[in-house]
Length: 353
Length: 76
Image 1 (cartoon, chains in turn purple, yellow):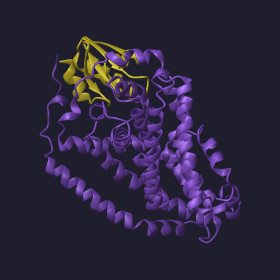
Image 2 (image 1 turned 180 degrees about the horizontal axis):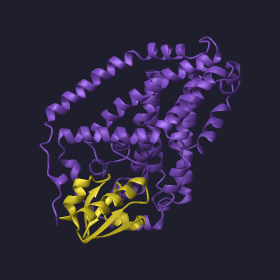
Image 3 (image 1 turned 180 degrees about the vertical axis):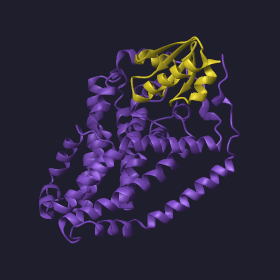
């Protein structure tokens, strides 16, 4: 085995340098963020369009929102990446195993937000949980909350629609995960798992927690940066497309059309929004700029939230992945219970606001 | 040395195979790398987040693409 030049370790940068770097970055971020409106107006002013025209309106919207969303996303995804380095599916499982329903559902939905999760490992995670004695309903609370209440969705809501809507989304997203998991647990559907999953139930061994146990701060920062890189690689195009589409709706679609189609008076708009949302599969990044534009044009909040939750939480590709472990009947119950929760949230909001 | 990469064919799993292949070439270690996509086998190792890396029957890494340094260290 030959030792190569590049493998000679350099002296690692000490942790305080990293921390200072992160602090400096946040300060710089803050300064730049404050300048985004003047920047976008300046940019539109350079172009040969009338600022007051539809085109000018759409362009100003686009040039302000794209950098704003990108910056918010970078900051929050980095922070979440660092926070998540304290959690792992293994630790979460240890916390949840043997928990009773009720408390377990609440804990599970909350951990769903904090535990690193990728829908491509939904199946091994599901089996890992169930085989370690996490009740089925509690496992579902996790699986519903993890994709639905994610930082990308929340950041985009804060940035584009406002923090009130973001908090509303967080609270009701969590509630749906908790209640839906609780109901599924009460239905005693363990027998509706795929047979091979039931067999694993008893035996599988839990491996010891590997590297997440002892990470240094520098490694946690690096994980945060890695998360930013990964999320940006996945969503940058969606954000630009979504905000572009949002800008078009913002500038061109007449207000009364949206009010008629998606306003609170049209009761059928909520189920229609959910039905439309299920086959759509974009990550949160693509759907939220559209959400913002719809709200701006007078669509009802409940309808728009229901649409967004359906797109993110009830995606067809994820159902196909889960099909490997759940029977069709169980998937139907899952869609029914979660869809019911989303409908109630939609109606409730249209009724209240 | 027998290396298995556990993962249902997502982008990160392919990246993991690439990292390991490169590490093997760099160190000149004699390894066979197999990709395991069957869910039953994956969960049989008790792995909950993919990609996972199994070396000679032991899970050494889960949940992310290993770095080139990590992979190099496993080959020694």
